[in-house]
Length: 150
Image 1 (tube, rainbow, N blue to C red):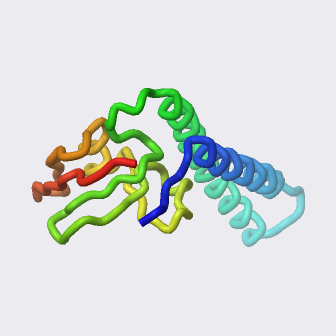
Image 2: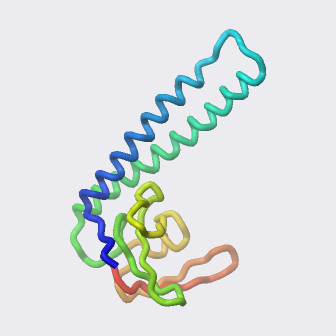
Image 3: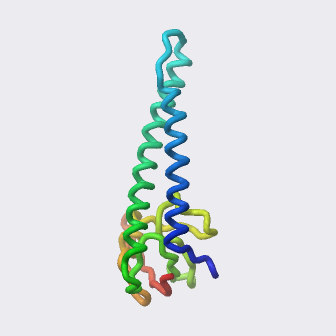
């Protein structure tokens, strides 16, 4: 598989996503302005806008965090350790599979995403090729072997 993502393109994707989310937030803000007239249905729309606004704020924060991490990871030395934005090949027990290690907002490279905050993501952060990591999902203990980091 030749799906590699450069640090610059990761940052460009995140910046574009951040701009789109901020634009969507501005549009949603206009929907939260109360009107003097209206019935219960109008007020329900306003509540929906506030919920969407809160979700957008959270997503914006997540993308800003990922962008900061991407900038740090692009400056870090290539020591083979898994960092945000890397493409990792893992053996989860069914043979090697490749994943993008980052946020869902970075998706689009034709790879499934493992987020750093997930149980598997927390176990993988900083692991190197050849490492066997252990993580828990509920009451189950799972294992993964890092086959490659690109």
